Structures are given as C-alpha cells and as structure tokens.
Length: 118
Length: 144
Image 1 (tube, each protein chain N blue to C red):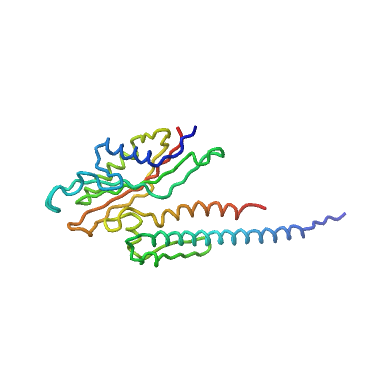
Image 2 (image 1 turned 180 degrees about the vertical axis):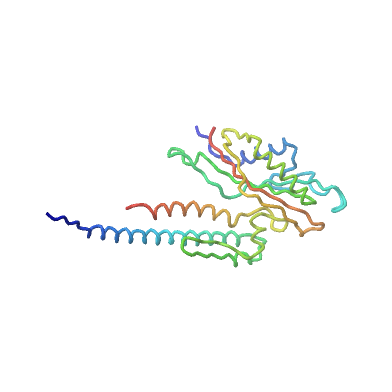
C-alpha cells in the first residue's frame, strides 16, 4: 500500500496568492499617488486664489511619494500664516489641512478597495 | 423631521457661549473694546480672540439620512500684548469650549475636542509686537 500527496495545486495556489499580494501593493501605491497628487493640486489652487499672495506659496507646494508614504509640503513661511491666519494674511485659510483631511478619507476608502478579495 | 446641520446657528451658539462667559471673542472679526485702549504700547491692552469657522469637517449618518451628523471645525485665535496674556485668553476659551454645553436649536452637540494646539507666536508685523495663540476644535453634532 502506498500513499501519495499531490502538492502541485498547493504550489499553484501559493503562486496565485503571491501575485495577488503584489496586486494589492500596486493598487495601494497607486491610490496613495493619486490622492497625494489631488491634495497638492487643491492646495495650489487655494493658495493661488489668495488675493494678497505673492505667488511664492502656490509655486512652492511640493509632493513626494515613496511606496505607501507621502507628503505635501512647502518651504514658504507664508504657508503657515495663510493656513492659521495672521495680521498680514487675515483670517485662516486651510489651504493644506482641508484637502488633506478629505484626501485621507478618500484614501481610506481606496485602500479598503485595494485589499478587498475578488 | 431631522434637523440638518445649520452652520450659522451653530456658530451663533458658540459666539453666545463666549459672551456669556464674559470673554472678548469676536465673530470673525476683532470684537469691540479689544486691543489697545489708548496709545499703542503705553496703554492697557485688552486681550481678545476671534472665532473662525474653518473649512473641512465631514458629514455622516445612516442610509436614510446620510448627512444628519455634522463634524465642524472652528479656530479661535487669541491676542495679547504678552505671551502670557494671549495664552490666558486661550486657556479660558479652551475651558468654555470643552466644559460648557453648546446649545443649538434642533441639534445636539455630542462632543467637542481639540483638533490642534496651535502654540503661541510673536507677531512683529505691527509696532509694538503682539502675541497670537490659537486652537482648533472639532464640534460633533447630530439631530436632537
């Protein structure tokens, strides 16, 4: 009496799961890039719409993504004052926090979709 | 019938709350009787604040009423002739926001939380320099 175990299906299943994991990572990174780009574009629009602005802020809003990490930032001091208000810039204008907040919620939905089983 | 979020009513309620607490907090602008009471730098400075509704927040709810809940954001910026004065006004604002119930017709304010501690900075754009501090708050409201 002999006993054999056919493991070829297990190997195939493992390969399928590996490919699926890569797909999830790729979709998640795409989502991060897309949302970050949208946040940066909205931030530039809001900064550009500020009537007393010099244009320096809108021209220096940068985005940076690496895998699942991303940031939108500026090196302009005006960015802080426009966001939180000052005697020169007037009332606070959340040029960065508002699109970031919306973008974070959108990203949460997209990451959920990226990881959903099919 | 569900009472939807009405920003004006909620903001009015917060302005009234500060007035009832005896604080000089302006409604989007500098309040009366604030700042220097005479020549700048050599007279009394009445510390004050300004309330700003801030873009952002979110709505939520059930399937039938998906926007019945509203999470709103407010910033209060305070001003003083010294760091301590700006901070003192903000501390009173913080106490009012976090411990005094906000009454909004048709709505219930479920929770108020600090969203951002803004710190205190010196403003050198005018002469003499002033100090500005600020906090941002999240105000969570639902139909009553």
